Length: 528
Image (cartoon, rainbow, N blue to C red; front, side):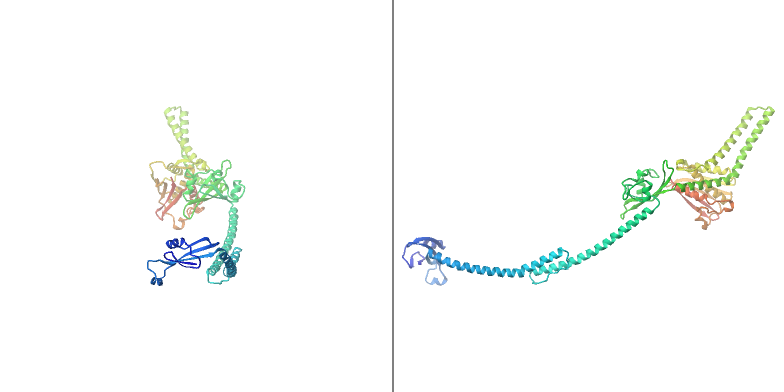
């Protein structure tokens, strides 16, 4: 051990004084130095330690000096190593003991504080994973794991409530699904029980569903949806012309008749559009009805009514035919008389023959009107006809009876033809029923006013009389079959009923206005 002052001079030593240049280096660098050196035949480890000046040292040393001096210690390396080895061993053993104690304590603490709660959390999550939502973890400490345990239990409770609600909803859905399947089965059974062919069409007129009658009618096999368009089964078009789809999308139900080529069947095809909650067109329900037998019955009924009307007209018509026949007979008698007397005046003969020709044409016209009136009805007989011309022809046929002799007929017609596509005999029967009804009401005395025109794309024909009018009790029954106030005169009660039915087949309707004691007006309205 050696002690040097702040100038680097040795002031104390336990061994020989030898120069040590590194003392000044330590003073100048103000750092501790450690180095190995060999002296006195030994390996030494030398430490040079600057000694800093403390406040109490300022009484003996100048203020400018920063260090009091330097302490130099040289230690034998072999003894240091031996001493350090002993100390290291002690320290190592002590370290091992402390480490083992710490590890044991840590393991015990971890097992109690960390591992056991984590294991419980793991068991809880496994229980939840297996579906045991009623499992709860015992709550322990108030640390983070305790808070986590509390949160886990709260979450498990919420999950238990939520899954309970889900299970309840699931049971309700299962019950509703079973109800839906049962209702669907009942609906299908009801759908198939309908005797008429029925199908549900989508927006493009493709068939989505069809009942059993529909499948059998068109010989379609299988169940469920049918991948075919309705137009492939029945080639229909809009009654007014144009696209059938556009007509359906108008949103109003409508029907039309289809005459099957080669089958002789008459089908009434009805369309009923349906819409979504937002009002958008979604499709339509289509019903097919075989009305062949009903149409034949109606036709027979119409013909019966026409024959009945002709029967009532027979006496008057026979009188009208007898008049020209009498004229023809008189002309023939006069010509024979002149031939016997030898009076062969060509001009007289031409005049007589002209009269005969006119009377024969008159008889032909009466006969032709009668025959055409009983001609069968049918769609095939429809063509463009003028309603005004039909009305006038009907008046002419009635005039053959002589029923217009005491009737003042006034006319107010549109100054152009009112052309519609129809069977001429249908509207002749409609006009005949209304006019005869008016003449019966007036007892062939009074005024008959006829109007015909076009207004707001609607054709109208109004027939008014000056009869006693219709009572309120009878007004709503005038179109009922077999309802008549002229049973004592041979009335059948079918004339106006059949006329109304014919008019509806053309998309038209009757409007009736009456004023008791003053007269009645029947207005026929048709789309133009």
